[in-house]
Image (cartoon, rainbow, N blue to C red; front, side, top):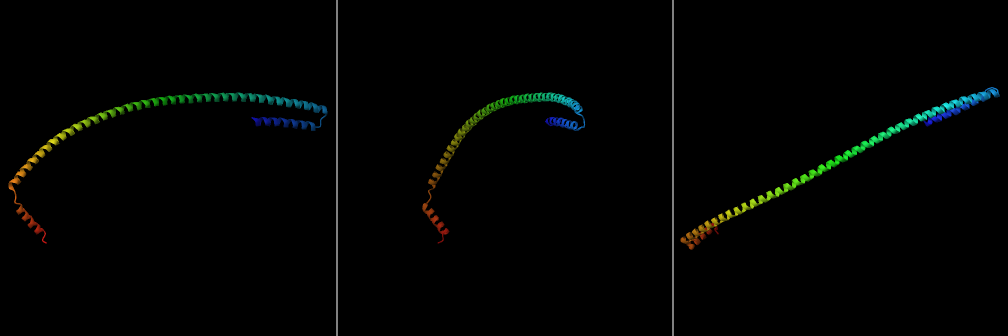
Length: 188
């Protein structure tokens, strides 16, 4: 727009200078020259007035277009701001819902884990009690078996002792047999 205005101003000034030079250099009388200059001046003033009117009209049109575009941009900016605000609000609501749901899930899972640990501890206690009862029973049975085995071994030892006492070997004979065996095995 600024370039166009400068061009118009330059064209008017140039045209006026050219017309003045043409009139001044033309071979006319002073009165005719003044009339021609007045006529040309009126023509140029009319032309300048027309250009000024066009310029004012165009400027007014441009102002209304700029206002309209600025209003449209403002409306678009407001719409965008409300859309963004709505989306942010929706996102915050979604985050609140997700956070609440997650918190509830964590509480429920924590409660479930606590229940599982209590049940596992109770089961472990029951297993330990059953195992200790089984161990006590096994120890008693083993104790009775040991007593029986010791009793049988003692009886067998008593019987063997009686048998050995009844036989009373001759140690001199056993000594001679051992000596002979040693000599057979060690020929030196």
